[in-house]
Amino acid sequence: MDSIDRSMDLSPFSLLNNYKIREQRSKKNEITDFTVQEFITLNVIDSVGAVAPYQLEWLWGKKSRKKLNSLSAKGYMAKILLSGRKDLAVYTLQNQNNIDSLLRKLVFAQLYTKFREVVSVEASIKCTRPFSGVINIGKVFPVLVLRKGDSTSILPDILKNVPRLLVVMENFKEIKLEVPFRVATDFSLMQSIDKAFFKPDGTPEYYCAEKICRKY
Image 1 (cartoon, rainbow, N blue to C red):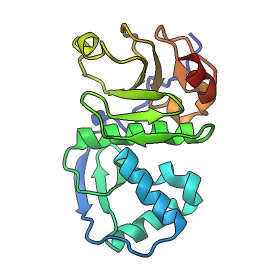
Image 2 (cartoon, rainbow, N blue to C red; image 1 turned 90 degrees about the vertical axis):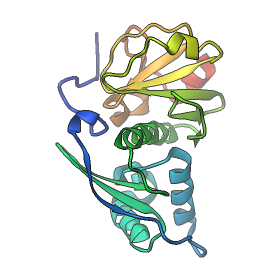
Image 3 (tube, rainbow, N blue to C red; image 1 turned 180 degrees about the horizontal axis):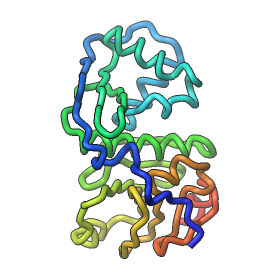
């Protein structure tokens, strides 16, 4: 299999990093006078739940971390510092104490970020479990974020009425579902969106978001 998945690496979104919350700075204030970029920043975080600085470089460039730190210092958003095998700064609009949930939000944010490279996309975390969010790229795709150790045995019953699905795994593992779906991995979402997706059997599927949208 011509895989772009680096199975020996550990994703920054993996619970195996043994993250602990080292510091948490709460949101205290509402912005009443903001720039267009600040408005977009807050809207994106509200839509995906949480972001790491590099996930907003499409908007702020290399100043992303500095800008997010500034907004957090002014009390306009919460900042959470995670420490473990890696260190990770996360920005949200509310305090988060559930590290598992926080990391799944970052995976969802990464998927949203990659789609933005090639297609108009909307996102929402207002969905039912076990989904982490919903991506709209002209068609609506529920997004299932699977982490190592997650059971998939109950998915067939949960997915009975779902027309299509996007699944994001830490590393590719073949699963069988009775619904059309495509798979991305944490690491493939750090590549070009054209190389991000796999067929259910693990075969890379090299087409862009527009084609994925038309296919389903």
